[in-house]
Length: 189
Image (cartoon, rainbow, N blue to C red):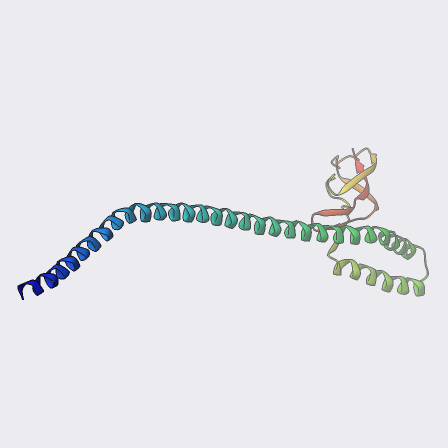
């Protein structure tokens, strides 16, 4: 029987030897894996850093594009508004002489006609007021070249200072700070 045990013992020893070899192989593979794993980890880190850099670049470009578009929109809106107001100003320049003629007509008409012309002149002035337009009528004020155009001058009388508006030939008009038509005046010198 001792001989029978020997093959069994030999089999057990063989199994133990195989298990020992099996344990050594994974240990050798594990020694290689950290190097591979470390290499893969470094590669993934590099790819992540590259992706983050690209993401930051795309985000920066997007923010700049949004800002550029917003600036474009604001410039375009300002240009449209300016063009609209300039167009309105051009039309108004053409109707200012109508008001001038109505005021001249008041000076040389009968009483019945005068009432009709005054009504039309009031409605004309109302339209200008609704558009935010103010008259420039600098009579007896100091000459201001930002609102007036001196087309004549006369020597100042005794006791009168030079540089004052003596007579207004044509009223001026302005909207806000923008002069639509300069007042044409006679100035004392």
